[in-house]
Image (cartoon, rainbow, N blue to C red; front, side, top):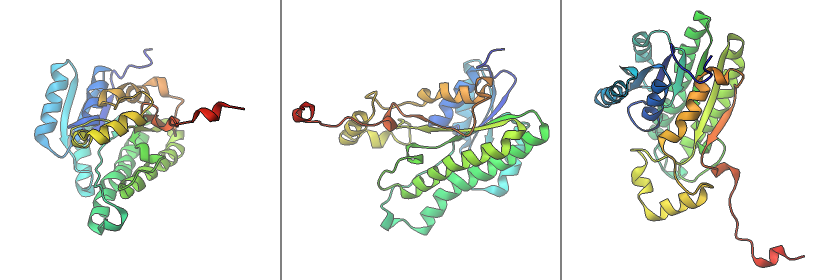
Length: 261
């Protein structure tokens, strides 16, 4: 048995039209999975599917809005049986706490937490009914275990995703469904490239990361395939930080006197 093969498996990847989702979708297809690429924008989905097929993989597109719970069942019917769920879709609106509106709060919560919760519930039910086990992989964040300014609502959702991952692992474990979370560090995507184009921001980010560079979606593929494959059958309830060492700690400017007796 190839511990890292996804041959014969169907993987549903949300937010697959760009960024982390698109990179992981391509990686899972390369590992042998048939990938259902889900997102709101059909044209971008078609591009993602075409790229996977051009590389010799198998994929199809399904339109899915994580904030539309009523439309979620119809989207899942198009997916067919799912062996792997990669909960990647998410959003953010950066604001100081004192400026957050109820509308923005509800929008972030609806996609990042409520949508993820109920999609996992629906797919989890399907996995239980089939009786063949499964894998659920949630996307957390550095803010699953670390706070940054001006992203308080996003932080609240990603902290909740970390704890939800543990709860899902406990309840689904007896059905041979493993649930884990990947918590990415600073990853350059189409959504964040403008942020990291700022020289001051870029210097801070690279200086704060142990490996002295920002990440790419491809940096997450290995961990995602591992958590989707038989290699991780005894791994569940874990939040794995793929962050270039950010959470490990930081350098500090010790003066020479600190080394004296």
